[in-house]
Image (cartoon, rainbow over all chains, first blue to last red; front, side, top):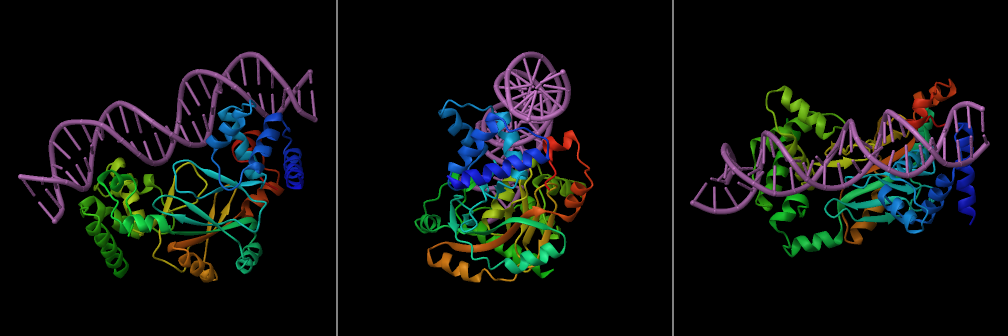
Length: 164
Length: 164
DNA sequence: GTCCCTGCAAATCTTTTGCAGATGG
DNA sequence: CCATCTGCAAAAGATTTGCAGGGAC
Protein backbone atom coordinates (compact mmCIF):
# COMPACT_ATOMS: atom_id res chain seq x y z
CA UNK A 1 0.00 0.00 0.00
CA UNK A 2 2.08 2.91 -1.24
CA UNK A 3 -0.19 5.67 0.02
CA UNK A 4 0.30 4.37 3.51
CA UNK A 5 4.10 4.37 3.15
CA UNK A 6 4.06 7.90 1.82
CA UNK A 7 1.83 9.27 4.55
CA UNK A 8 3.66 7.38 7.25
CA UNK A 9 6.89 8.95 6.10
CA UNK A 10 5.23 12.35 6.22
CA UNK A 11 4.18 11.69 9.80
CA UNK A 12 7.60 10.40 10.83
CA UNK A 13 9.31 13.46 9.38
CA UNK A 14 6.93 15.76 11.20
CA UNK A 15 7.36 13.97 14.50
CA UNK A 16 11.13 14.04 14.16
CA UNK A 17 11.13 17.76 13.43
CA UNK A 18 9.00 18.38 16.50
CA UNK A 19 10.85 15.93 18.72
CA UNK A 20 7.70 13.88 19.17
CA UNK A 21 7.47 10.10 19.22
CA UNK A 22 6.04 7.52 16.87
CA UNK A 23 3.83 5.55 19.25
CA UNK A 24 1.70 2.52 18.56
CA UNK A 25 -1.44 4.62 18.92
CA UNK A 26 -0.29 7.07 16.27
CA UNK A 27 0.50 4.28 13.84
CA UNK A 28 -2.84 2.56 14.35
CA UNK A 29 -4.69 5.85 13.98
CA UNK A 30 -2.94 6.69 10.73
CA UNK A 31 -3.65 3.25 9.26
CA UNK A 32 -7.28 3.43 10.21
CA UNK A 33 -7.71 6.90 8.77
CA UNK A 34 -6.12 6.02 5.46
CA UNK A 35 -8.51 3.10 5.15
CA UNK A 36 -11.47 5.42 5.63
CA UNK A 37 -13.07 6.89 2.52
CA UNK A 38 -14.52 10.36 2.78
CA UNK A 39 -15.32 12.06 6.07
CA UNK A 40 -14.94 10.82 9.58
CA UNK A 41 -15.33 12.17 13.10
CA UNK A 42 -13.21 11.58 16.18
CA UNK A 43 -16.01 9.40 17.50
CA UNK A 44 -16.04 7.23 14.38
CA UNK A 45 -12.31 6.53 14.33
CA UNK A 46 -12.36 5.70 18.02
CA UNK A 47 -15.13 3.19 17.43
CA UNK A 48 -13.49 1.62 14.38
CA UNK A 49 -10.24 1.16 16.23
CA UNK A 50 -11.86 -0.27 19.32
CA UNK A 51 -13.73 -2.90 17.29
CA UNK A 52 -10.33 -4.31 16.40
CA UNK A 53 -9.36 -4.52 20.08
CA UNK A 54 -6.76 -1.82 19.62
CA UNK A 55 -8.59 0.61 21.86
CA UNK A 56 -7.20 4.14 21.95
CA UNK A 57 -8.63 6.48 24.54
CA UNK A 58 -10.80 9.32 23.43
CA UNK A 59 -8.30 11.85 24.74
CA UNK A 60 -5.49 10.37 22.68
CA UNK A 61 -7.61 10.27 19.56
CA UNK A 62 -8.29 13.98 19.88
CA UNK A 63 -4.69 14.81 20.68
CA UNK A 64 -3.46 12.84 17.71
CA UNK A 65 -6.03 14.06 15.22
CA UNK A 66 -4.70 17.48 16.07
CA UNK A 67 -1.17 16.34 15.35
CA UNK A 68 -2.14 14.70 12.05
CA UNK A 69 -3.80 17.96 11.05
CA UNK A 70 -0.68 19.96 11.73
CA UNK A 71 1.41 17.35 9.93
CA UNK A 72 -0.65 18.11 6.82
CA UNK A 73 -2.04 14.58 6.57
CA UNK A 74 -5.69 15.28 7.35
CA UNK A 75 -7.75 18.45 7.57
CA UNK A 76 -10.79 19.56 9.47
CA UNK A 77 -13.59 20.00 7.02
CA UNK A 78 -16.83 21.93 7.11
CA UNK A 79 -19.68 19.61 7.75
CA UNK A 80 -22.36 21.64 9.50
CA UNK A 81 -22.76 19.35 12.48
CA UNK A 82 -21.99 19.83 16.13
CA UNK A 83 -18.77 17.88 16.00
CA UNK A 84 -15.82 18.32 13.68
CA UNK A 85 -15.21 16.18 10.65
CA UNK A 86 -11.90 15.27 9.16
CA UNK A 87 -10.70 13.78 5.90
CA UNK A 88 -7.32 12.83 4.55
CA UNK A 89 -5.96 15.16 1.93
CA UNK A 90 -3.69 13.01 -0.18
CA UNK A 91 -6.29 12.60 -2.88
CA UNK A 92 -6.01 15.82 -4.81
CA UNK A 93 -8.50 14.65 -7.40
CA UNK A 94 -11.60 14.36 -5.29
CA UNK A 95 -12.06 16.71 -2.41
CA UNK A 96 -14.66 19.28 -3.24
CA UNK A 97 -18.07 19.14 -1.64
CA UNK A 98 -21.71 19.86 -2.26
CA UNK A 99 -23.38 20.06 1.12
CA UNK A 100 -27.09 20.05 1.79
CA UNK A 101 -28.01 22.70 4.36
CA UNK A 102 -30.99 20.62 5.50
CA UNK A 103 -29.83 17.02 5.90
CA UNK A 104 -26.08 17.71 5.71
CA UNK A 105 -25.58 15.04 3.07
CA UNK A 106 -22.29 15.59 1.28
CA UNK A 107 -21.61 14.83 -2.36
CA UNK A 108 -17.97 14.65 -3.39
CA UNK A 109 -16.82 16.38 -6.53
CA UNK A 110 -13.68 16.12 -8.63
CA UNK A 111 -11.25 19.01 -8.45
CA UNK A 112 -10.45 20.71 -11.73
CA UNK A 113 -7.63 22.86 -10.42
CA UNK A 114 -9.33 25.94 -11.83
CA UNK A 115 -8.29 27.67 -8.62
CA UNK A 116 -4.56 27.36 -9.37
CA UNK A 117 -4.45 31.04 -10.13
CA UNK A 118 -5.71 32.08 -6.69
CA UNK A 119 -3.23 29.75 -5.10
CA UNK A 120 -0.39 31.61 -6.79
CA UNK A 121 -1.66 34.91 -5.46
CA UNK A 122 -1.75 33.53 -1.92
CA UNK A 123 1.78 32.17 -2.14
CA UNK A 124 2.94 35.58 -3.31
CA UNK A 125 1.54 37.01 -0.07
CA UNK A 126 3.39 34.56 2.11
CA UNK A 127 0.57 32.10 2.69
CA UNK A 128 1.79 28.55 2.11
CA UNK A 129 -1.03 26.50 0.60
CA UNK A 130 -1.18 22.89 1.76
CA UNK A 131 -4.55 21.88 0.35
CA UNK A 132 -7.81 23.40 -0.67
CA UNK A 133 -11.47 22.63 -0.82
CA UNK A 134 -14.45 24.07 -2.66
CA UNK A 135 -17.81 23.83 -0.93
CA UNK A 136 -21.20 24.33 -2.51
CA UNK A 137 -23.99 24.98 -0.03
CA UNK A 138 -27.50 24.13 -1.11
CA UNK A 139 -30.27 21.58 -1.17
CA UNK A 140 -29.81 18.00 -2.23
CA UNK A 141 -32.31 16.42 -4.60
CA UNK A 142 -33.92 14.37 -1.78
CA UNK A 143 -34.60 17.36 0.42
CA UNK A 144 -36.05 19.33 -2.47
CA UNK A 145 -38.35 16.40 -3.20
CA UNK A 146 -39.39 16.09 0.44
CA UNK A 147 -40.19 19.77 0.50
CA UNK A 148 -42.41 19.38 -2.56
CA UNK A 149 -44.22 16.51 -0.87
CA UNK A 150 -44.83 18.73 2.15
CA UNK A 151 -43.31 16.15 4.46
CA UNK A 152 -42.78 18.76 7.12
CA UNK A 153 -43.94 18.73 10.71
CA UNK A 154 -43.44 20.92 13.74
CA UNK A 155 -40.58 18.88 15.16
CA UNK A 156 -38.64 19.10 11.94
CA UNK A 157 -39.29 22.80 11.70
CA UNK A 158 -37.39 23.38 14.91
CA UNK A 159 -34.31 21.35 14.10
CA UNK A 160 -34.31 20.70 10.39
CA UNK A 161 -36.58 23.06 8.58
CA UNK A 162 -37.08 22.07 4.99
CA UNK A 163 -35.94 24.80 2.70
CA UNK A 164 -37.88 25.49 -0.45
CA UNK B 1 -29.76 50.33 3.50
CA UNK B 2 -30.91 48.22 0.59
CA UNK B 3 -29.12 45.04 1.57
CA UNK B 4 -31.10 45.00 4.76
CA UNK B 5 -34.41 45.40 2.91
CA UNK B 6 -33.51 42.62 0.53
CA UNK B 7 -32.47 40.19 3.22
CA UNK B 8 -35.39 41.07 5.43
CA UNK B 9 -37.74 40.26 2.57
CA UNK B 10 -35.96 36.96 2.11
CA UNK B 11 -36.51 36.16 5.78
CA UNK B 12 -40.16 37.22 5.71
CA UNK B 13 -40.86 35.06 2.69
CA UNK B 14 -39.21 32.10 4.34
CA UNK B 15 -41.12 32.55 7.59
CA UNK B 16 -44.40 32.89 5.74
CA UNK B 17 -43.79 29.72 3.76
CA UNK B 18 -43.02 27.86 6.97
CA UNK B 19 -45.83 29.45 8.96
CA UNK B 20 -43.32 30.95 11.36
CA UNK B 21 -43.47 34.41 12.89
CA UNK B 22 -41.44 37.56 12.45
CA UNK B 23 -40.56 38.34 16.05
CA UNK B 24 -38.62 41.26 17.45
CA UNK B 25 -35.72 38.96 18.26
CA UNK B 26 -35.48 37.75 14.68
CA UNK B 27 -35.47 41.29 13.35
CA UNK B 28 -32.79 42.46 15.77
CA UNK B 29 -30.66 39.43 15.00
CA UNK B 30 -30.87 39.97 11.26
CA UNK B 31 -29.94 43.65 11.58
CA UNK B 32 -26.99 42.87 13.80
CA UNK B 33 -25.71 40.17 11.50
CA UNK B 34 -25.90 42.31 8.39
CA UNK B 35 -23.87 44.96 10.18
CA UNK B 36 -21.16 42.42 10.94
CA UNK B 37 -18.31 42.10 8.47
CA UNK B 38 -16.77 38.70 8.04
CA UNK B 39 -17.21 35.83 10.48
CA UNK B 40 -19.09 35.71 13.71
CA UNK B 41 -20.03 33.14 16.32
CA UNK B 42 -23.27 32.69 18.24
CA UNK B 43 -21.46 34.04 21.29
CA UNK B 44 -20.38 37.20 19.47
CA UNK B 45 -23.82 38.13 18.15
CA UNK B 46 -25.32 37.53 21.57
CA UNK B 47 -22.81 39.90 23.12
CA UNK B 48 -23.21 42.59 20.46
CA UNK B 49 -26.95 42.55 20.84
CA UNK B 50 -26.87 42.63 24.61
CA UNK B 51 -24.61 45.69 24.64
CA UNK B 52 -27.48 47.57 23.04
CA UNK B 53 -29.84 46.48 25.82
CA UNK B 54 -31.78 44.30 23.39
CA UNK B 55 -30.78 41.09 25.12
CA UNK B 56 -31.74 37.87 23.34
CA UNK B 57 -31.25 34.63 25.23
CA UNK B 58 -28.56 32.26 24.15
CA UNK B 59 -31.12 29.60 23.30
CA UNK B 60 -33.00 31.93 20.98
CA UNK B 61 -29.84 33.04 19.28
CA UNK B 62 -28.99 29.43 18.46
CA UNK B 63 -32.52 28.62 17.36
CA UNK B 64 -32.63 31.63 15.09
CA UNK B 65 -29.17 31.25 13.60
CA UNK B 66 -30.42 27.87 12.53
CA UNK B 67 -33.44 29.45 10.89
CA UNK B 68 -31.38 32.11 9.14
CA UNK B 69 -29.16 29.36 7.79
CA UNK B 70 -32.11 27.48 6.35
CA UNK B 71 -33.50 30.70 4.95
CA UNK B 72 -30.31 31.00 2.91
CA UNK B 73 -29.25 34.27 4.56
CA UNK B 74 -26.20 33.06 6.44
CA UNK B 75 -24.12 29.91 6.32
CA UNK B 76 -22.00 27.97 8.73
CA UNK B 77 -18.44 28.28 7.65
CA UNK B 78 -15.33 26.23 8.29
CA UNK B 79 -13.23 27.93 10.87
CA UNK B 80 -11.32 25.21 12.67
CA UNK B 81 -12.35 26.14 16.18
CA UNK B 82 -14.49 24.37 18.73
CA UNK B 83 -17.54 26.48 18.07
CA UNK B 84 -19.25 27.18 14.76
CA UNK B 85 -18.78 30.33 12.78
CA UNK B 86 -21.27 31.97 10.49
CA UNK B 87 -21.19 34.64 7.83
CA UNK B 88 -23.81 36.25 5.67
CA UNK B 89 -23.78 35.18 2.07
CA UNK B 90 -25.17 38.10 0.13
CA UNK B 91 -21.74 39.33 -0.89
CA UNK B 92 -20.89 37.07 -3.79
CA UNK B 93 -17.66 38.93 -4.49
CA UNK B 94 -15.74 38.15 -1.34
CA UNK B 95 -16.28 34.87 0.34
CA UNK B 96 -13.39 32.58 -0.27
CA UNK B 97 -10.94 31.85 2.50
CA UNK B 98 -7.32 31.10 3.19
CA UNK B 99 -7.13 29.53 6.61
CA UNK B 100 -4.00 28.98 8.67
CA UNK B 101 -3.97 25.51 10.20
CA UNK B 102 -1.90 26.76 13.11
CA UNK B 103 -3.40 30.04 14.32
CA UNK B 104 -6.70 29.78 12.40
CA UNK B 105 -6.32 33.25 10.99
CA UNK B 106 -8.57 33.68 7.96
CA UNK B 107 -7.79 35.79 4.92
CA UNK B 108 -10.71 36.64 2.67
CA UNK B 109 -10.34 36.32 -1.07
CA UNK B 110 -12.37 37.59 -4.00
CA UNK B 111 -14.42 35.07 -5.92
CA UNK B 112 -13.68 34.77 -9.60
CA UNK B 113 -16.60 32.53 -10.45
CA UNK B 114 -14.24 30.06 -12.06
CA UNK B 115 -16.34 27.36 -10.44
CA UNK B 116 -19.47 28.24 -12.44
CA UNK B 117 -18.97 25.12 -14.50
CA UNK B 118 -19.13 22.77 -11.49
CA UNK B 119 -22.23 24.55 -10.30
CA UNK B 120 -23.98 23.67 -13.55
CA UNK B 121 -23.09 20.03 -13.16
CA UNK B 122 -24.55 19.98 -9.64
CA UNK B 123 -27.78 21.60 -10.75
CA UNK B 124 -28.07 18.98 -13.47
CA UNK B 125 -28.00 16.33 -10.74
CA UNK B 126 -30.77 17.93 -8.73
CA UNK B 127 -28.62 19.76 -6.21
CA UNK B 128 -29.77 23.36 -5.84
CA UNK B 129 -26.77 25.59 -5.21
CA UNK B 130 -27.39 28.48 -2.83
CA UNK B 131 -23.85 29.66 -2.29
CA UNK B 132 -20.34 28.37 -2.40
CA UNK B 133 -17.00 28.84 -0.76
CA UNK B 134 -13.43 27.97 -1.65
CA UNK B 135 -11.06 27.28 1.23
CA UNK B 136 -7.30 27.11 1.09
CA UNK B 137 -5.69 25.36 4.04
CA UNK B 138 -2.13 26.25 4.87
CA UNK B 139 0.20 28.41 6.87
CA UNK B 140 -0.07 32.16 7.14
CA UNK B 141 3.03 34.29 6.75
CA UNK B 142 3.18 35.03 10.50
CA UNK B 143 3.18 31.38 11.53
CA UNK B 144 5.84 30.51 8.98
CA UNK B 145 7.96 33.30 10.36
CA UNK B 146 7.41 32.19 13.94
CA UNK B 147 8.41 28.68 12.97
CA UNK B 148 11.65 30.00 11.44
CA UNK B 149 12.36 31.93 14.65
CA UNK B 150 11.91 28.71 16.61
CA UNK B 151 9.35 30.39 18.86
CA UNK B 152 8.02 27.03 19.90
CA UNK B 153 7.60 25.66 23.38
CA UNK B 154 6.12 22.54 24.92
CA UNK B 155 2.73 24.10 25.63
CA UNK B 156 2.32 25.20 22.07
CA UNK B 157 3.37 21.81 20.81
CA UNK B 158 0.41 20.21 22.50
CA UNK B 159 -2.28 22.57 21.31
CA UNK B 160 -0.85 24.57 18.46
CA UNK B 161 2.15 22.87 16.98
CA UNK B 162 3.98 25.05 14.53
CA UNK B 163 4.13 23.47 11.15
CA UNK B 164 7.24 23.85 9.07
C1' DG C 1 -57.80 32.52 20.65
C1' DT C 2 -54.33 29.63 18.91
C1' DC C 3 -49.91 28.20 18.14
C1' DC C 4 -45.44 29.71 17.97
C1' DC C 5 -41.59 31.90 20.56
C1' DT C 6 -38.88 33.17 24.30
C1' DG C 7 -36.09 32.77 28.51
C1' DC C 8 -34.48 29.91 31.94
C1' DA C 9 -32.23 26.10 33.67
C1' DA C 10 -30.93 21.61 33.02
C1' DA C 11 -29.24 18.26 29.90
C1' DT C 12 -26.37 16.68 26.32
C1' DC C 13 -22.57 16.31 23.51
C1' DT C 14 -17.88 17.33 22.07
C1' DT C 15 -13.37 18.44 23.12
C1' DT C 16 -9.69 19.62 26.44
C1' DT C 17 -6.86 19.11 30.50
C1' DG C 18 -4.42 17.59 34.98
C1' DC C 19 -2.32 13.87 36.78
C1' DA C 20 0.06 9.48 37.61
C1' DG C 21 1.94 5.69 35.65
C1' DA C 22 3.84 3.66 31.11
C1' DT C 23 7.00 3.85 27.26
C1' DG C 24 9.86 5.29 23.16
C1' DG C 25 14.42 6.67 21.80
C1' DC D 1 17.15 7.72 31.98
C1' DC D 2 14.17 11.35 30.79
C1' DA D 3 10.80 13.69 28.40
C1' DT D 4 6.80 12.55 26.01
C1' DC D 5 2.52 9.61 25.87
C1' DT D 6 -1.39 7.41 27.39
C1' DG D 7 -5.72 6.49 29.96
C1' DC D 8 -8.74 8.08 33.21
C1' DA D 9 -11.75 11.14 35.17
C1' DA D 10 -13.03 15.63 35.65
C1' DA D 11 -13.59 20.13 33.55
C1' DA D 12 -14.71 23.17 30.10
C1' DG D 13 -17.21 24.82 26.32
C1' DA D 14 -20.86 24.76 22.86
C1' DT D 15 -25.38 23.68 21.62
C1' DT D 16 -29.97 21.69 22.48
C1' DT D 17 -34.20 20.82 24.92
C1' DG D 18 -38.37 20.76 28.24
C1' DC D 19 -41.33 23.69 30.17
C1' DA D 20 -44.16 27.61 31.52
C1' DG D 21 -45.41 32.06 30.48
C1' DG D 22 -45.60 35.79 26.67
C1' DG D 23 -46.56 37.37 21.99
C1' DA D 24 -47.61 37.44 16.81
C1' DC D 25 -51.23 37.17 13.66
